[in-house]
Amino acid sequence: MNEPIIQEQSMARVILRRFFKHKLAGIAIAVLALLMLASAFAFTTPYSPTDQEPTNSFQKTSMDHWFGTDELGRDVFTRILYGGRVSLTVGLLSTFLSIALGVLVGALSGYFGGWVDSVLMRTTDAFLTFPTIFVLIILGAFLREQQVPWLKNSVLIVIIIIAALSWMWPARLVRGLFIVLREREFVTACRALGGSSSRIIIQHILPNCIGPIVVSGTLQMASAIITESGLSYLGFGVQPPTPTWGSILATAQNQVFRAPWIAFYPGLMIFITVMAINYIGDGLRDAFDPYVIHAEK
Figure 1: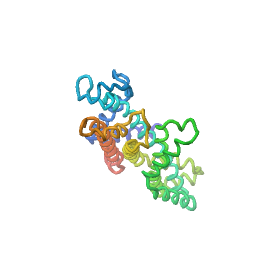
Figure 2: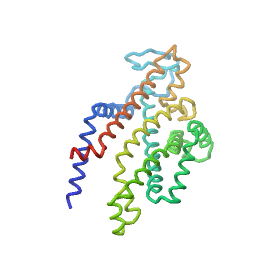
Figure 3: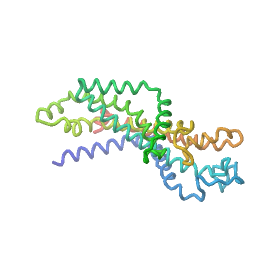
Figure 4: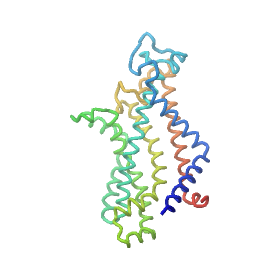
């Protein structure tokens, strides 16, 4: 009875050991954790992200204002911390929703095949043909006009529209994995013993897809953060006065030569965050490599 538990714990240790052998992935985890921690404790700064002090505008970096101030006298460091909350939350939640939907579609399509596969994959292909940025803009404008209370939150709208147009890649990935795994001996044996389709999918096939799904999720999160920043920069993402890294960049575009720090720091945060997530994805890809895991065990 205890053997599966011991085996599972052993594999978890192997995965963790291989992940932290990837030095850049370990550094990236620390950097991302620091960014998330700083954003979570943004309220500890002595400034508000929205209060304006026109007499204090365009202040350069100093001990009072670490990243300077913008054209309205707002502390850029404080706005970046609060913007990090929004950008990271959008990236995390939209990734979770898109991966959940993609896994559901891909699992059903890959396991059942036939007309189920045809319908779901043709729908996936149709979504892949959409010009993403234009659809995101149209959806964002449309949802804000709806008289639905919970859609008045612009952060929630951005999460929904990014997730709605990014589930297709994980769906295709999971479908391919399920097509291969459904023909394996352990699935055939479970089916012969009377196992239901839901049990086979959830308990036997899906656990063998966790590695690729997790790696895909990290890349998806990086893409979601860039998408949110682009939408906010264009004015169709999270609406003022809520700060995001993209909206801070948008307000800085007319002052880039007079006060370059207003554009530099949010751009740097986007760059560092996306690079950290990509390195974490590289580390996870190496850690979940089945051939290397079995060799080390």
